[in-house]
Length: 341
Image (cartoon, rainbow, N blue to C red; front, side, top):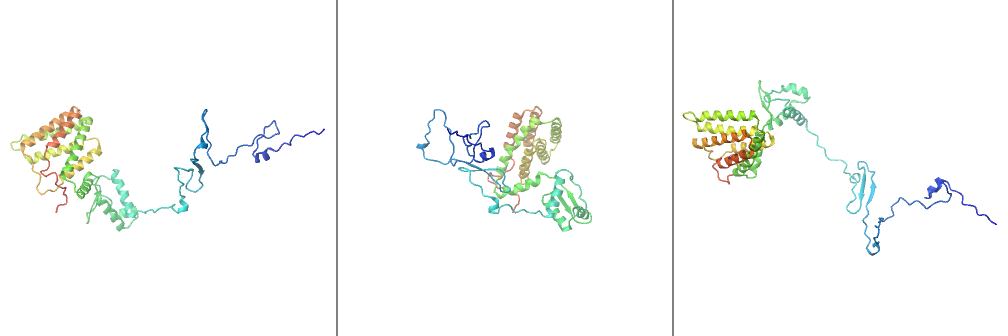
C-alpha cells in the first residue's frame, strides 16, 4: 500500500512572490491574491435585484487613470481621461521661466519715498534732506535721484524748487490729482456735463443718507457754526451774492468731508471738482439773493434731519435740492472741456 505524502510547505517569502496566501495552520496554499494592477476595464458593482445589461450596451471607456507625476515642479496626482486632458510638461516645452523686469534704481528710490509719504512718515510741507545727503543715504548718483524726484513730482507728492533756497517739499495725496486724470479720461470719451451731473446727483444723496446715521456731535457743531456765519452774512444791509454762493459751496464740501465712508467721499468729491473746474465759454452765473436765501433754508432743513438722525428725510431732501438747483447753463449734450482751445 502506497502512502501519499502531503505537499511540502513552501516558504512564506517564496509563496508571496507567486501571489499565494497561507493559513498559518495549513500547508496548503489558499487562492491567489488579486493583483493590484488595473484590469484594463472598470469594475461595476450591481445593486441587489439589478440585472447586468452591459452585454447589450456598446462599450464606452469612462475610466479615469490616476498617476503620480514625478516631474520637478509638478508634484501631486494627475487625473487623465474624459474631461481631464493630459497636461503638457513644462520641461518638455521649455516653459519653466518667464521674463522678469528689473526695476530701475530711480524707481526704487521713488517707491521708498512714496511709501513714507503715503504712510504718514513724511508730513505735508516737510522738506526733504539736501540732494547730497539723499545721494549718500540711497547710494545713488545725482541724475538717478533727480529722476526719482521727477517721478514723484508727476504724482504731485513733492514739489521741487531750484536755487540756493530750493529743495523738495512733501505733499500728501489728495483727490485733486485723481480728479484731473479722471477728467481727462472722461473728456477723451466725449462725456457730457449732464452725464457727470447725473452721476453726482445719484451719489451725493447716498453720502448724505450715510451721514445722517453716523453724524457725531462734533460734525453737527461744525455744520451749525458754518450755517450761523452764513445767517449773519445774509442779514447784513447789502449781502454779497458771490460771498453767499461761496459759503453754500463750502457747506457742500463740509458735508462730504464729514462722511465716514472715505471711498464714497472721494468719488463724490472728484465729481464735484470736475464740475467746478470746467471751462465753458460762458461762466456759470451767480444765483440772485432770493434763490440764495431759499438754498440757505434748505441747508437748515438738512441740518435738522441730520440732528434727528433721519436718513430717509435727509436723502429725499438733498436729492430734490440737487436736481432742482441749476449748476450749469449748458445743454445736456455739452461736452466736458477742461483743456480749452
